[in-house]
Length: 255
Image 1: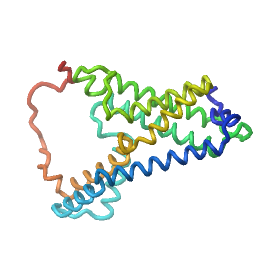
Image 2 (image 1 turned 90 degrees about the vertical axis):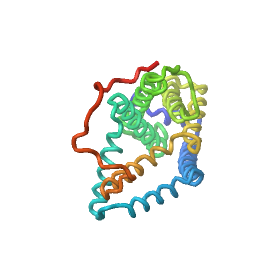
Image 3 (image 1 turned 45 degrees about the horizontal axis):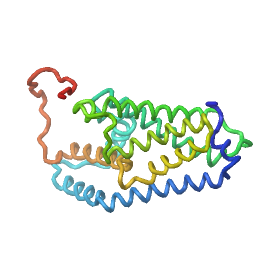
């Protein structure tokens, strides 16, 4: 089961061109939704104005080589390893979800466009990565949802309490979960639910946190540049030996 392409089996009832067109539409929805989000919230205007102000207030110039070095550090630390998360559990859950999502999306694209029918010879590792990616999304996502969320772990709210900000994680979990169930059960009911959840995931970019995956690296890079040029968003420099007050930090359990 884990080495068979579920989309190739689906080609017996749905032409590959239809599946490929659906993926193209999802890509357009993500690109268009992100651009709409940028224009509507004026994120780009804020970013470039903030960048200009930080450059004017900087106390030391940053060379082109330093810029490249800062970009590489941002890609490795914030991008590949999510070093911005101090909490180890949150960081691991985020990495599981992120790398699972990448494997899930990339292998879907490859299998649908390059190996859309059972006749196409396909490396067995591709469907294996697809299943593994979806399982990683479920593992990291459900762990975060039920045990790590701040309003659940620290504030005592029910894990079934849903707000608008949860649209991205819930649609992502629904897509991965229903995709796994459809691939195993092979019923048209779960295929329909899988398509609905996936359409909501990629079509709700202007209203969800989907576009944050593009904004966060830019914000992290800007923060590194501000620290390098001395502006630091008008904050004081960190002390060499900060004085520590109170007891050792504990997990928040205030409810």
